[in-house]
Image 1 (cartoon, rainbow, N blue to C red):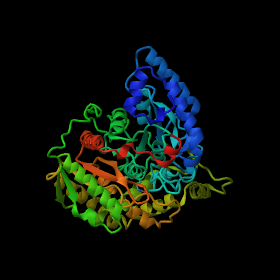
Image 2: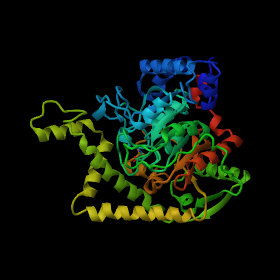
Image 3: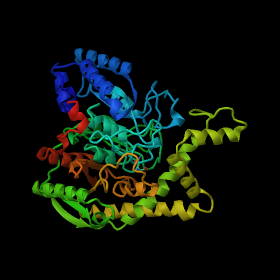
Image 4: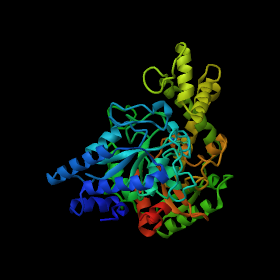
Length: 492
Ligand code: GLN
């Protein structure tokens, strides 16, 4: 079969079960495509050829023995922020360019237990800080829809591999939008679960109170399959929730759209910088949801103006603390010929971290320092609580909240956004992390340059099933999610 890369996860699962093809054939097919197409997209940091083929053979053997589950033998790509035993785990940084993880992140281990085959590790903004994937030590990944554009970030590699048909689905992490925004920029579906739904164990930390992993795929259905593997309690992560996991695949039609109340925050549609095409596509998608039975209600989210300043205090503050472990002594990059211990710390960190990471360490250290702690960090935490309360009040009125995922479509590579401009692009995604809520991004059309636009749906706590179900039903009635990126079409 030549079009294995066009199959959905369900189709792959059924094809494997019916012995139409083996995991080995499927895996070889993807590895060949990666070798051929990825030099143009530059999405993989590491391709794990041998590991993948060994896992594929093991999956085929399990199937022969009658022990296969739904996902046994299906390939996946992991963001290079998940620790993978024996495989380089770089977080997109020179600091970890030489780091071979001695253990697997729980998400990776759960994938292995389910029989997933690891194709490799994919590119990202350095330490997940950014919105373009350009801050990676390994250079920029290209957007498969238009190679002179960014795929978004920080999970830009995860989005690019799926959009270019170089993996059927991928893992991502989202601290302030890093699953949803690249999904939006690459015409994919991406779910950021409730904080605590997916284990953070073995995920290189950016901002611990905001970080959460989730699936990135073409459709809500494909995401549901990966969520079934990723979700769950983990005794190794004290912030993971001991709460029963739903069957996200079985629940894909469980939510009825008839009468579903969708809140439209007035403030979100008056944001300066909201692109006209993005606004139009999002409004059209809401019309479609209304046709399918949903009821659209205007709501207020009065804290909107505080999102960016609050997030850009708390996230750098936590990052400055998390990144203090990279000192050139225990692991990671070490400067050569240090004169003394201070020189070793200083040069290892100056040479090992890129500019954006250093900027955030500076902001965070400043905000946490004696004398400024109360004025900045404590204040930001108080505002964070108000942002959460704003959402909870809204959920008394509506079932889900709709918004654009990002104010624009994908930027041009090297558009030289200044940092504040880049931070403002996070306006629609970061509050969700500050509140710990789940949210999903789904493709709803294109702008004048045929770049994808994403609709975001934000749910109340633990409503992942509902979000997937709403998007699934929208996708049953539309075909945006089935459209292929230019480079995928050229290599169909
Ligand atoms: N763009 C945001 C930031 O740079 C979000 C990144 C993320 O979610 N990891 O912080």
